[in-house]
Structure formats: C-alpha cells, structure tokens
Amino acid sequence: MKKLFTSIVVVAVVLISSGTFAQAKKAASVPLNEKSLLWEISGNGLSKSSYLYGTIHMICGNDYFLSDKTKKAFDATNNLVLEVNLSDPNEMSSAQQFIYGKEPLSKTLSPQQLNDLDVLLQKRTGMTVKQVDKFNLVSLTSLIMMKSFGCDDIKMYEMEFIEMAKSSSKSIAGFETLQSQMDFLSSAYTDAEMITMLQESNDENTKKMVQNYIQENLPEIYNDVTAEKAMNEKTRKVLLDGRNENWIVKMPNIMKDKSTFFAVGAGHLLGEQGVIRLLRKKGYTVKPVMN
Image (tube, rainbow, N blue to C red; front, side, top):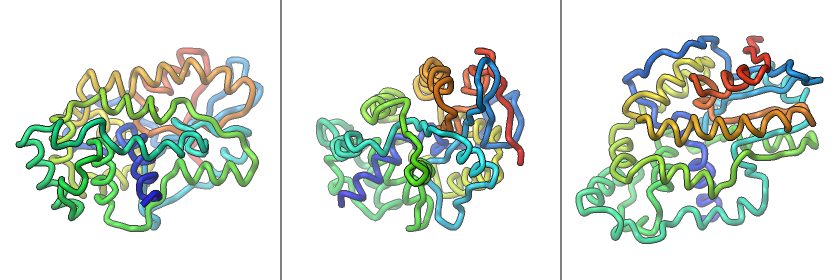
C-alpha cells in the first residue's frame, strides 16, 4: 500500500505539466516547431553545455524509450535537476500525507459532484467514492490517470533518470518541493473544473499523448497541454508560466557550476513563457538535438 501511495504522489506532482489533461481542441500554434524532446544549452559564459529534456509523467513499459542522443547528453553532464528531487528521503517520507485531504471529500464536494465522481471512479478504477473519501481530489486524479494507460508495467521518466544518476554518481536536485507542487495543483483548478476535466478525459487522449511523445512531437504536446479545455489563462500562469520564470532564475547558477541535465514536464519547454524562450532571452543558445 505504501508503494501505491508513493506512486500516486509521484504522478500527482508531474501529471498536469506533462500533459495529462490533453484535449482534442487546439490552442494557438506555437512558433517553435522542432520535433525534439532534447535541447542543448550553451553560450552566455558557459564552459560546457547543459541539456533540457521534456518528460512525460508516466508511460507503459513497452512504450518507454530513451534515445541514444539523450543517453549521450545525460552521460556528458555532472548534475541532474528535476522539478522535484524524488530521491530526497525527506520528500518521499512525507509523500503519504499529501494523498489525504484536510477534510473528507463527502464534506468538501456537493452531492452532485460526489455522484459524478462516484460514477467516474467506478467506470475508470472499479472503486467507489466511499472507498477513497479521505483522499484529496488531486490524488484521485492521479489514480484515474494511472488507470488510463491500460497497463501494469508503468515507468516514470523522473524515476528512471534518478536511477541513472545514482549509478553514475551524479548529484541530484529539484527546483521545487512536493508541498509546493501540491499547492500549485490545488490552486490551479477548482474542484468542479478538475471533475469536469476528468469526465472529458479518456483513454484515447492518453494514447494520443503517448504517440506524440514517442514521435518527440513537442509542438503537438504543447498545443494539447495548453488547449482551452485543459488550461485557462489563470491555470497556465500558475502551472506553467510562473513556475518557468522561477526556474529560470535558478538555472544560470546551476549551469555555471556544473554541466546539468534538466528534466521537466514537456509542456514547460515551448510557448512565449516557455523555458526555451526564457533561456534565449537571457542570452543562452538553446537548440534542438536532432540525432
């Protein structure tokens, strides 16, 4: 059960920024159109290149891949930086507390919302709302999304990179904490908005997202992540733009000291306030690694 709790939290802290709520309706096309998940960061006084990689929150084992170019870039760096340092014992020891709400769902949701959630849970997970009454809505979202992949052999890129970093004695760090990520997720959507998105999501959306990821189709991933039904202006500022700006403040000092492999949700890379454009505005050369 503890392993399940930890898995749910790990998914929760990265699911939205990786494109879990991708919808069919498109947002405005993004200017950057290179199809690559891996980007090289150089110039602006850096003595050695760092790399930026866009992750998906989870993927079935038979769909998991790590290209040779990504392995080469990872091996060339000294430092791994994730959204959250999931290798930190202090972070993971407190993971269970983030699953539960301050009050039961039966007290925070309306009767109609409880009924809608119950129907959704039974259809997607086989569980009833009474069985998970103490969980918070973000955790239930994670559980439902885990089921949408339709496989038991789940891999998470963040955890794979952590194991690779440990085996090669790289240092590991995170931009944020579990607490801050849960706060972002909780403040980005109302309960009603989150339930509506869950109702509109389906296994086909997940399959489409995975195929775009396998094809390294970053523009399509970004368009889906920021589609109207997935994100409004407020949500985009909370989950993407604001966090990107916070990370950009930290990245120069990290890269100056060590060649770094940054692995964050793919939805953070593109856009006017995406990490790529923000780095370029600071004077860095950021280019896609195609092979």
